[in-house]
Amino acid sequence: MAYDIKIINGSIIDGSGAKAYAGEVGIKDGKIVALGNAPEDAAEVIDAKGNVVCPGFVDIHTHYDAQIIWDRMLTISPWHGVTTTVLGNCGFGVAPTRAEHRDLIVRTLEKVEGMSAETLFEGLGQDWPFETFPEYLDAIEKSGSAINVAVMIGHTPLRLYVLGEESTDREATEEEIATMRGIVKESLEAGAIGFASSKSFTHTGYKGKPVPSRLASTEEIKELARPLGELGRGIMQATVGPGLSFDEFDEISLENKAT
Image (cartoon, rainbow, N blue to C red; front, side, top):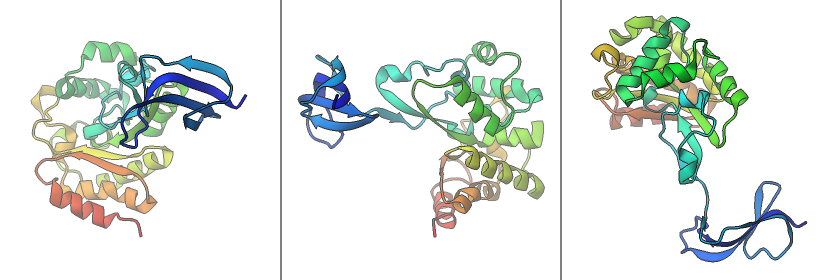
């Protein structure tokens, strides 16, 4: 067979900017090998009559960090054509998290993202299958996912992991920043696609306190971004706020540009 899969009778949108057109798609070894006209035989033929055949969508801003542990379908993103989703936005997440801080992480997600704490507690269970960020990635890989997943390490759980409950009250010491920077680098090496943070005044967590990342100094955020430059890969995502806006983004970008 020339193709493993052939999709016929669909309305193709190929991502080039061209208008939709009727045609066929031939797939072999997981790759598109024929587009528009696929005349050869296939092991499987899918009739897409009445449907659009197009590239999958990448959802760059989600908060599935907890949900992925119990919902490998990442409901409802695939229903809308999403084939890749990015977790860890705004510096939120569930790893790294010590056992004694699980309640704080859940309550923070409840307040700042409007999630159901009851659902989060039920879904994550009594014994979370991870503590560190690399362990979290391993847990995701073990349970599997219906679509592609990329994860950034979040500033809020990172600060809570290193500073404890004081993370919502004060800036970090040089020693604590160094520890966090090491964890960011370790996480990138384990597979994180970047580092995320937030200084937005709208991000208020449990008991009305600011989320931990809001207490970070601009210098702390710059230091935590440095592993991106050191390793020559990864992205930084952030929600703007005092001490973290366009000027700071410009400085961080220039300081970590590839050489």
